[in-house]
Image 1 (tube, rainbow, N blue to C red):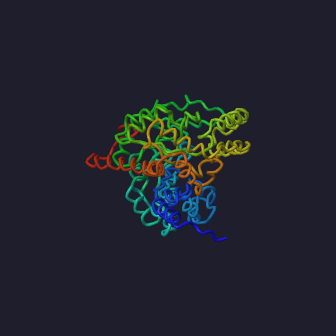
Image 2: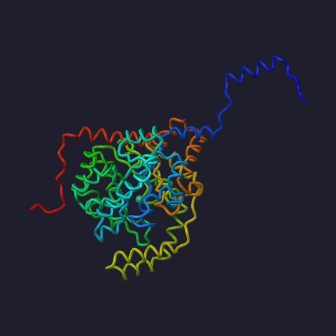
Image 3: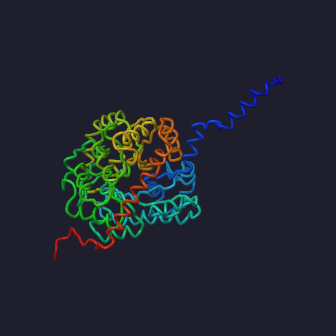
Length: 430
Ligand SMILES: [Zn+2]
């Protein structure tokens, strides 16, 4: 039926439409903000996942295939709008016992270089803030490298500098092991976890302090994820540049030693650093931790007997312990919106410049429901907007906070250009 509207009403409607364009719905707004933003994710364990799947020297190109790893591949990085993933050169703690940590780190670094070289249209090797911004304008994904586990440098400043030259731009000072110069928070999920056994130096040794200062000179970001409370204190004191946590969350919301206390978050922020939120369900949700702790207590006797039986065979010991833990029923994942709660917690206690994303995809067995893999990241943008955060604040969380921190680390390095390389060593003086 054709209803004729009075002319005056049609005219009024036309004026209203011109003055206020149809409201952009939340999903469209989120898609626009996410697409324009630089999205940094400072911890993805893609190299380790590929190494476990194929071995270090095979199928680098595989990162382009859908399902290349459990959580990450190029199509899903694209769908997730990721501009700047850090692929972790993760050196398991076992290498501190068996030797070969440096060689393993070199192999994984080389593997990342191989991946990038195999996909020149999609990926760009990146090692600076400028590289990341350039890749964004070129429509490529800026792939960066960070070492996880300071034992990778095998107590050698020369090795540290060598890794910097290979493009490594951060180093997590420890993994779950205390190394020769920094205490770790330890392997807190183990049934026999005792933090005291990891407190060897009570923070950083003198050499550890020298490592941090040399990283400042080079322009390598200092990462306090995995380190002990005392090490965080020492790092904040020793470092001449801001420091960050590449993949940790808030202890106020999930009480595990891998998460940061409010006080630590505030001190990291006050120094110009950032806390990059880990999305493991255990890192996000106390209920998941409690469930896991109970399960661990149940396998304590078997765990201890494996440790005793293979005490002289670290590789076998690790295999058997992994098998035991993998045999446990899977932890129930939490809801993905908990990740946004952690982001908001950091904003509340330390301000909107102090937080970013360090998902730990491919390094965690329990991403939350709804953020199962990297393509789901735009949901975080939508939820932050839904909760009333401004577009500017959302862009900060997605990447600008991290870039601001990285830029400060670069500035400190430039300001130290006249300083000679460190000659510090753990070897006794001749
Ligand atoms: Zn880690």
